[in-house]
Length: 210
Image 1 (cartoon, helix red, strand yellow):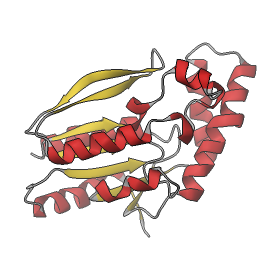
Image 2 (cartoon, one colour):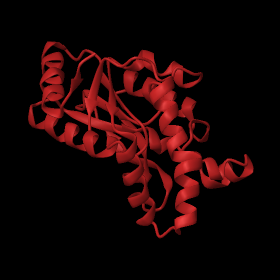
Image 3 (tube, one colour):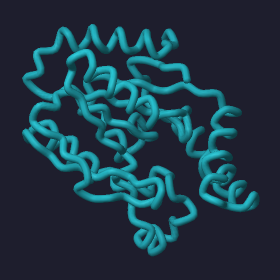
């Protein structure tokens, strides 16, 4: 499979969307390891597709984080961000609703507060392309494997591990964590999660270099 740059990917997506009659919404899965640039790319892609006349919106997987109180009760707080710390069936239910309902109000993840905000963004009737963005969208393990049938097209972001490591360090420094706390987060959680995405995701339609 050929690795694409962003402009190549945008051209392919535009071609695919041009062929679509949009009787139903068109779902694009944008997956990849932590800190590979999913949020930035999804925002850029959303903007560029709208400029091209394809009315699009974003559904964040991160909006389905379990609250810290739930993670604490399940002894998973130190694993926050791992596959088991998300409400996967909640995400599946929202994909189902977006596939069948004209307007759906969806949650988002507020990174400044490190929590999900419910009913935060309206996906209106006019939005016909949904960019679903998140680490584990293409995982082959249950229950994540239930999501693949909702996606018309899938993209995996490819990123060098050293670049991921550098971005993760900068991310957690920005939150004021100590060096010891950062090491714990990255080497006990973030990078193992990244390896899980790389090794255990189904084959995407396209690979995007970033």
